[in-house]
Image (cartoon, rainbow, N blue to C red; front, side, top):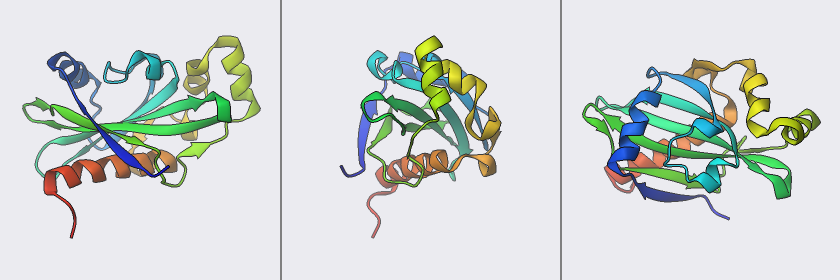
Length: 169
């Protein structure tokens, strides 16, 4: 399937949930899937082991906020990255954001090790990533962003920019 954006309109309550989750611009951190905001519907949230919450300044004084969600695809025994992104302006989060479905960037899908499936069976999907975070750390700078999450971030920001700036010539 081709990569596609799915735009989502946020309620004012959902916008309010995002403000305390915003990391320092230029950084990222791991968040348990169970703690994701309600822009992730419960049926999707239960499939997400963890997410990297990424923030970087925009050129206009706002901040890109990207949730690079690591979604468990049990039938295929894989973990796919599914990002959700929006801009947080000085006045607060934007009224809409974008999910990137079926991304095509390098590192989007990976097969976890056997230890992952053992942990899933015994204690749930979130526990594994809290003890074995990406690249061995739970937070970092954008330069330390894992490859698949960097691709998710770039794709999500590209769709936001195309909506704001219009189609590229």
